[in-house]
Length: 581
Ligand code: C2E
Ligand code: CA
Ligand code: CA
Image (cartoon, rainbow, N blue to C red; front, side, top):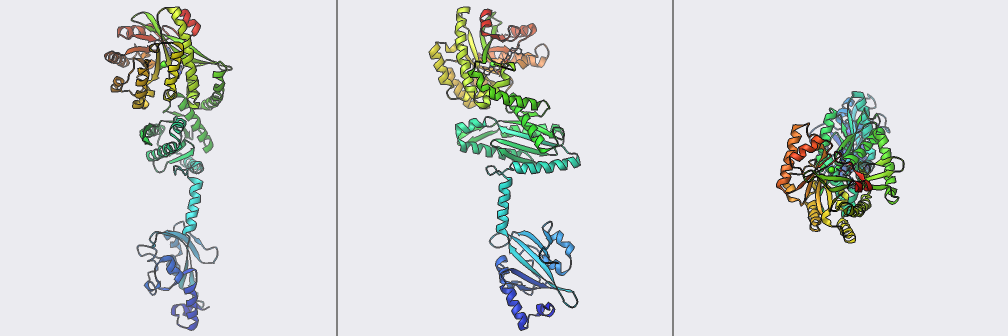
């Protein structure tokens, strides 16, 4: 077909038929001549672009339906033979057609079509003069691929993103991590993989319901995302487990700052179903290249570091170290064995006397839990209380502690004559467990033990985690007649204002302060201030971890009431404690 004369003129009968064919073709098509004038703009093209042919025929405005400002469309570039420019106008979205030789195709999004933006796939090819081989025009077809695109995006979304939080999922994290690793390898960059989960999430879910749990997860994800840069990746990989990939942080110090900021930020008050919550998070960090050179190792090691963080200080963070893998394995084993420990009599209570330095007599004892592990020997509670908290076993174990301690304490009366105070530690999860008060009432009723002689030790951080709620429970316990002690005083954030509001009878100054007595003048001044404050608030004070005569003397001079520590006695088995009495 000699297009040379026919296309530009469209006068003869034959060209009239050709025009009819083009015009009625179901494929959106337009044709321009060598002067870039639009010769054809068929009906399908009108449908796709929403612009009628009259507006364009005879003009050089083929760009108008597509772009806000004048620029060549693909047909224009082909007419001018400027194929090299295709790449600059359709960067990364064009290719030589697979179907028609010499044609080019591309796909792009056009935001300004009436009724919303559309994705179009278009192919353009030149029209040549048969005799001279000269380009005399170009023909371009358009196809609306918006629906396919959306579908594709949906699939991509489902494959790569988590539906609850819209964050990256494990799959996308993996991809990004691998990309980052190869880039970091080439350019010698640092990467930090942080593994996070929400402290006590199971409990939130159990007590507030799954909707609230979902909301907490969503908000947690939002906060993580808001706290890092766009080039970092935040992913949710399971239940309440998140991973943050920090891309090329400047230094390890920098990573530490970011983690601190993250933990602080996610810990801000959160309102879910009209309840105030404070979410804590424990974070484990593995660094590329030091702690692993592939994604699997980095994730595994960050996870192990997180377990360590949880075990030691909830709401804290740990960097991976090599001994962690071994520990993480032991941790899993212990978790399973702890189930049997309680029922098979492997738990025992030790008692550490509290000694009044003013009255020079034993005034009470703290019950400290021990686990006689069949193969690992005697385990201290730091090794397994966090496990018990995590699994919920802390509730039955805590009940056992209270019952056993009271039974033991009733034998002291005979041995000692006067009444002794019995202190038991109450863990966070136990404290929030609604049945705690009921259980205490019950043992008191059964044993006739005087509640004033039962002192409940609650750590400062437990109380400060949610001061209003804690105070409510404390007041309730107080009204039942129990004594209350604030444990590990000085390590949390309690302000003096709070201390005044809480119904505590006693504070226990943390060992970390006592250790510095005689060594560090500043810490001495702090202990002195604590003692004065306690006196002003009519609180008794026990100093914990008193190991030396020097520490004892300092405390005695400064008016501390009681001491507990190796200087007076190590924690003892029940029968040895009775002997001491
Ligand atoms: P805590 O309440 O601060 O208990 C004091 C810890 O300091 C005990 O460690 C005790 O053995 C140790 N200690 C006492 N005197 C000295 C001293 O002079 N120097 C040094 N360096 N340490 C001293 P333990 O028995 O390993 O208990 C560790 C923690 O485990 C306790 O800290 C408490 O928070 C928790 N715990 C112990 N028993 C129970 C329990 O029955 N239930 C719960 N929920 N937690 C418990
Ligand atoms: Ca304690
Ligand atoms: Ca303590």
